[in-house]
View 1 (cartoon, helix red, strand yellow):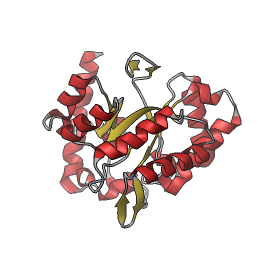
View 2 (cartoon, rainbow, N blue to C red; view 1 turned 120 degrees about the vertical axis):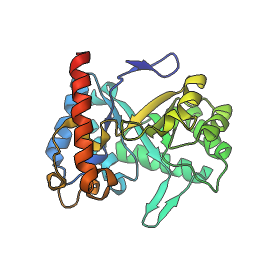
View 3 (tube, rainbow, N blue to C red; view 1 turned 180 degrees about the vertical axis):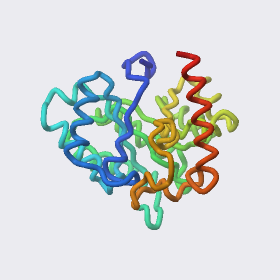
View 4 (spheres, rainbow, N blue to C red; view 1 turned 90 degrees about the vertical axis):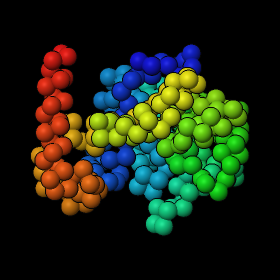
Length: 253
């Protein structure tokens, strides 16, 4: 378990729900709902979604699950994100009016009164982070959001944001294949300011599960087919790395 400030205690292991709606092949709706229930029942329901996943489908699916049992909301620490107005072409907004509009839309799709942790999915280079975070802080005052966070933000941006309102968490890719935060100041900044680092794709987008041995293990519509780490000789080299990591894990028990 880990803490956001003094409370609440949340599971160190989170669940990214993006795959229910996009990127990792075709997902089965009934199976997705079953996974969410299993998480809640196992008391490890630290669930992460975003308004852009499946163009709202991901939040709607989680909202459907929450509506099945009123107790489900009390069992889950619910995180979502805003920022992407569109993906093709990519349009990012952190304008105050959009922040509030996006939050209200997420609350409606999720069918909840508040969001536990609300992230800015990507920083808007056209809007000062101070303006965006001020709008997010107003959502906290209104009771629509409990904690605020940033995703894929630089160390400088994190510091500027934290001066406006405490940043509870920073989400960034972190795994044996992505260690940039150890060298670009983000990890040091978060440790200094007491900000929780939430790693996305910590198992290397599936590599550490051990179930992927070739690119043909991915469905034709799986986005991982286009990632460099799964291409050509890189795939074989990374499988060797997985074997070495497995040996270390066994030694550590």
